[in-house]
Image (cartoon, rainbow, N blue to C red; front, side, top):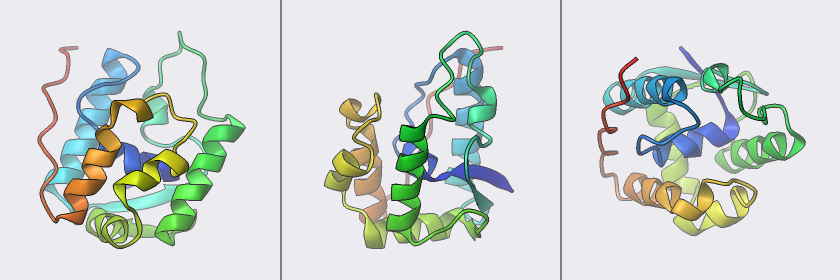
Length: 143
């Protein structure tokens, strides 16, 4: 089972091999590829730091506990009709995104995210809405 906070459900849809450090990218690639290739994988919604935050680099300002990130998590979980502690499959997450999120919703759901301007999350939402597969992640850095 993979533990994820609310906003990371959308981050993963837009994941294209970028991240805060090589270790973070390796971990995010592993989680992304597991969910992409094994959509029956169970995901537990958590409040606060999750399996992705666990690899946030120590040499950068830690924002995983910031109020704005917690608010973003709450907005995403509410939009998807999910709650902390709930377990669903990744396939169910994708179904809820398809039914409840439009690409343009990323602007309001994730307005404080520094990655938002790249447009990759909107692309990921659009792929899910069209029932198209998410692309394979680029090969992560060696390490």
